[in-house]
Amino acid sequence: MFDLGWTELMVIGIVALIVVGPKDLPGMFRTVGNFVGKAKKMAREFSKAMNDAADDAGVGDVKRSFDAATNPVKTAVNEVKKSTESFTAQTMAGPKRAEMTPERAEMAEKISKKSAEIAEERMAAEAAEKAAPKPAASASAKGAKKAKKAADTPASDPSPKPKKAASKS
Image 1 (cartoon, rainbow, N blue to C red):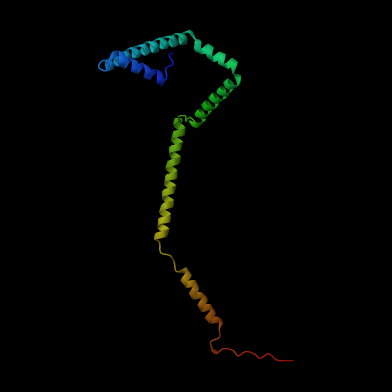
Image 2: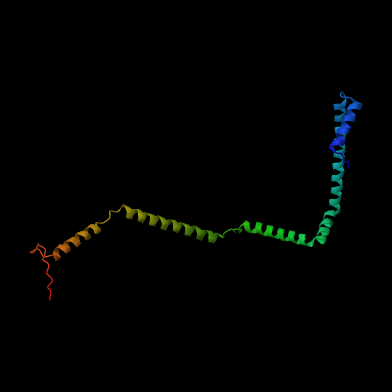
């Protein structure tokens, strides 16, 4: 609308200070600010009313069609993006689980009860194995080996046998 820079605003401020005077200057700025605020509010309301009327008339559809005609590559990319987003949303949601029929629910309950019984039996058997004393099978096996070795050696000759001298021929 108006293109005012800092220098123009400073000149306007100095002129207003000279014309209005320092005593009435804050009141004048307040009045100008209220006027500018009302003007902006009216412009916003007008713009909103025009946009609503355009939306009711279907200008948005015409705009999308015009954009699609002028830039088909961008339109195609947008459609691919929408498709991948919807596909991702559907696949990430996971499969939908259906309700089980009463017969199937009954069989599932039987299976889980039987599995629990088997697990309890196995745990009880493992606990009984741990609690039972281990037989001294390893100690008796060592003793049996020593006894067999003693039986194999002759008792009458406790001295070691002399080594035979190698003869030279």
